[in-house]
Length: 263
Image (cartoon, rainbow, N blue to C red; front, side, top):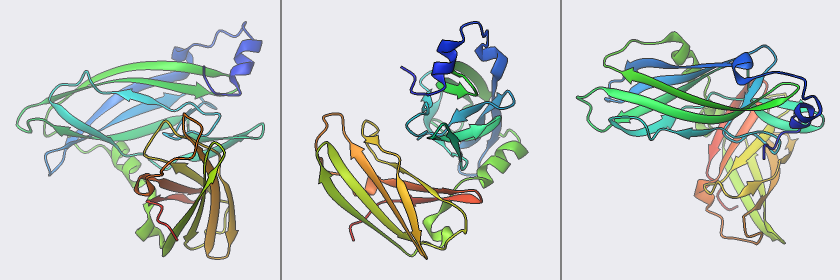
């Protein structure tokens, strides 16, 4: 079942004949071979005006994208470099993603650097405007070295979130308390106030753990954010603090904080 409030609009208006091809086009940008022998390419999504798709952690009402690279040849691993996403508010619901165009850089490590690679990906994702649609993509591209630098990919790489060090984070402390069906996580992060509202998205190493929308406030140079973590069995559990990621989103950029140490 697609968790998107706007799905109700689709069900309520069956006369609408919107299809995936009406609102979404996609391609693989082949990119270039890097000095370390890996290859930088990108998945590009072009959406119709007003339409959006979602980040890896899309919020309660969003649809997380799922990538399958198993059809690739001479590919050892794929690392996605996510540009900083935007926060969307609709009918009191918060989602996180991208609107109209997304260039998603992917760094591919070959099994044998002396041989060419074929990158093949199947993607399941959601796209939304006033209605939401499930979308399926199958993209293939040969990655023959050396390739050529691609300005669109290079721009997307510059749009990544800042690291904690780059953003001036000086302290991170996380308190974990058991609740009936999981854990409450309270994070305190010392970093400069951007002067704009901030949204914090938490992720855990275990993707099966449900993460609530965080409640966040500023106290000068300290950001305090509280969320709840609920595993499939609905009980307190041992949290891998090193696997927690906090992404702090503001209108002027994003900060990614890795790890959530005890106070």
